Length: 338
Ligand code: KG4
Ligand code: ZN
Image 1: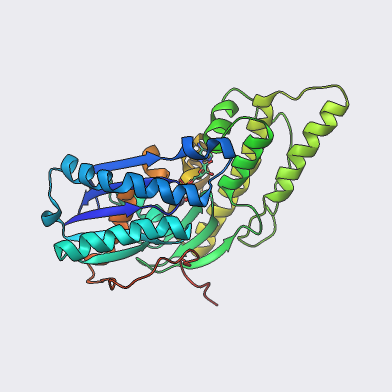
Image 2: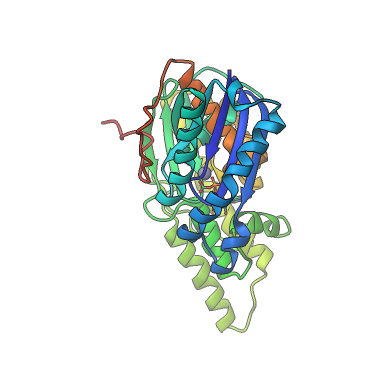
């Protein structure tokens, strides 16, 4: 089954062709980072326009690289939410057009489900249940997944998302945008134990996160040091901040898996590209006899292959999305179960 995947929820225009949710035939990502960099963050109106310009030629190219024509498609998968509404609309309109013109079933995909299904591309995976940690620019969430496509939200951030915290600290440190990869890189040269930042909610006994206190602690630390005539080493600052974020994520995720009695943890979202998170979670989970899966680096950040993979998993179950589906900027992964 050949599925086209279209993703335009934020600042990457992405199109992919994936066979049976596993084999990537083509996977094109056009990043708008250069458009948004000088604003220090994503500007929604500029994102929508850039998607409009990039998408049509990318659709042609993705099909050509995959060695297929639109007529060979067995499904068109598209992100319908959550995300920026104007940005989502561009992908949704294009997907409807392809679906209608080629008489191919349309399947709307939740962006976060895409991040989860990125884990199974190329490598397949064990059967559910899973516990998923979703950490991206817009989300921090712990989710219990007892079976395919069923989600019980265990907890999430009370303030900043993980990627957002990385981006804000990078901006404070004048490193650039997006901040995650820049802090990750700098932290490799620093000492994660140099500064002991607070681990918010580490022992709160629930599955929630809070990152705004850490952000304040970093800023206060730098100001106090400077007032005393000392300049903190950026490498140590980056490494110590990153360690505080990752420590809590790892501890809470492993505990959730243990308490839910699941044998597999899935990681999803742009922040899963973080080298320290990937490094620390495996031994922590292994100590509890839990397996960890994460996507390859290029499949962690937003891409079309993950949307095609998630869409395929629904299409094979006979699911279809009507052509009048609307983009939903606040689309929930699941309602929290009582
Ligand atoms: O999933 P994603 O591509 O887009 C959203 O759905 O939000 O995630 C983007 C986020 C950005 O905040 C970026 O700074 C962060 O992922 N990120 C990282 C790393 N690479 C990307 N954060 C920490 N370490 C990284 N290596
Ligand atoms: Zn994402």
